Every structure is written in structure tokens, then in C-alpha cells.
Image (tube, rainbow, N blue to C red; front, side, top):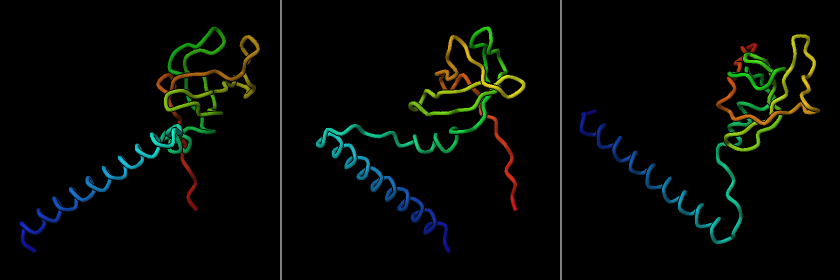
Length: 120
């Protein structure tokens, strides 16, 4: 297969993807503008898959009870930048601070703990 055919096929496929993705994006924006519905966030399902019910480590001190390096569990995804986290002490019990156990944090304030999965 000549090099020219490969180059033209790559360029043609790239233009096709950009063209059809652009049309889909435009139609989606038009639909939400006409109907007045609120546009849902594309990556929210991806964020839920990555963060929901996973353990995280705190990067900086939150208060006098919850220090840097505290382990917590993500209980809810609020939006693309904010999450609700419940922190645990060394024994595994929830930490309450001023009557609250859920803390609203930015995703940049925590680090996700990736766990190895058993493959069978």
C-alpha cells in the first residue's frame, strides 16, 4: 500500500470525525436552547465511575480533626468540580466535626487511591 493512500485515508477519516462530531455538538446545543432544558454534564457519568464510593486521601489540612493524609470515602458527586467526602479515623469510624460527617471538597483537594482489582 503506497504511503500516499495511507496519508489521504488518515486525513479523510480525521476530517469525517471532526465534521460529524461538530454536527452532533451543534444539534445538541440547539436542542437544549430550544427546549430550555438544562444541559447535563457529559463527564458526570465518567466522574461517578471514577470517584463514587472510592477512597481518597486529603492533600491539605481541613480542620483540627481531619489532617493532611486522612483517608475518606466519596459519597456523592455534586458537580464536575465538587464532591462530598466522609472521613474515617484509624479505627474506621466516621469523623464528625461540628455535627457534620459529610464535607464538601474540590476534586483538586483530594487524591484518589487506586486499588488493584482481582482478575479471575
